[in-house]
Image 1 (cartoon, rainbow, N blue to C red):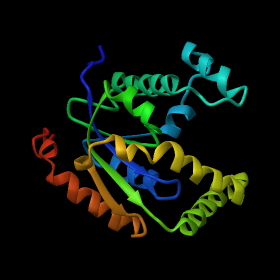
Image 2: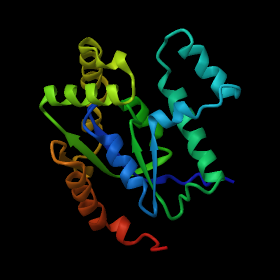
Image 3: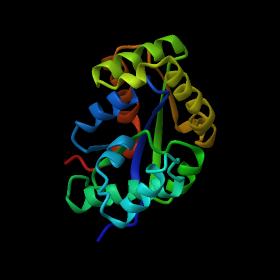
Image 4: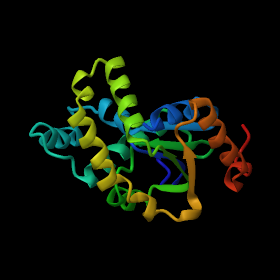
Length: 206
């Protein structure tokens, strides 16, 4: 059975291009950390399942997936990882990036996650964010995402829907990190914070 207790969680937070996916993936490689990105949830979705069919009703018509359905998809993915012993919530910390994506999702998820720290990767230089997004799009062969209008829309959506989450979480939970540093330097800063947290110090060392 899946334990209904809330998962011990760290959030990697930032604008598109800030490097949150990179940091989440690297942290998830360490023992006792399990990384789950929002993109992984949708890519691994079984469209034959009941919840997958519900998702297709919206995505097939080009509509935004409702927040409650997004969280249900995420919870279904996490439960499957627990069942398969890939994620062991009694000893592992859950690392999330890309979800929750807005305040409403954060409110829905509060029954499932105990957020111990939010790592905000801040990069005020929007030209640098756009450069990174174009570079990533070319690397992933997603040429549509190199379009300046698409990039501007993604950044505007972040400002409107996602950035307000910084006001939702208690300020004492938020670590402001300089995303212009190298990935190694950013990860070092994250680990400095994590290893000083009481919840980490008291966690099983197995």
